[in-house]
Image (spheres, helix red, strand yellow):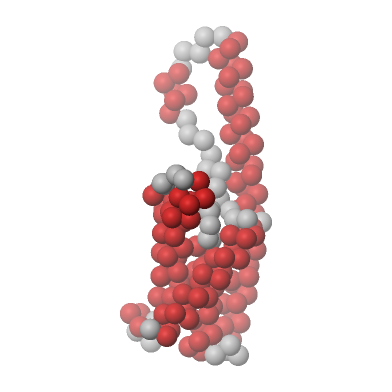
Amino acid sequence: MSLFTNFPLWAALIAIAFAQIIKIPIHLIATKEFKPSLAFSTGGMPSSHSAAVAALTTGIGIMENVTSTVFAVSCVFSIITMFDATGVRRQAGEHAIVLNQMRKDFLYFVEGAKDWKKKAEYEKRKDLKELLGHQPIEVFFGGLTGICIAFILYLL
């Protein structure tokens, strides 16, 4: 199979692009805030990781059959990826929220206690990225997105 005609690969890549781009209008509808940077960020609805692995697995199932060894490997890979998105990565994001708040509280205390002469250095510090993982609903819809995209592309 040529790289350019590798259906499971293209289904996964298109699912990633679609899931990342669709985050912008979903966020706009939910919050009334237009945020194009969401197309290049982690986290959010739907999960592009879940969309990618679901589209990949669905594409393999369509092309190779669901009884193939490569489908089994891809399916297990997808389950682990989706589980990780709601587990470890989500918890890392929750930790970042707490650590960012602790840092801000500490810096507020230090500024109030004495004159802080290194304000330029303080202004250069960045918060930890808080949106790393996904809520289970985001992973579910990411997976559903990937499955739908793989079937739609196959029919085209």
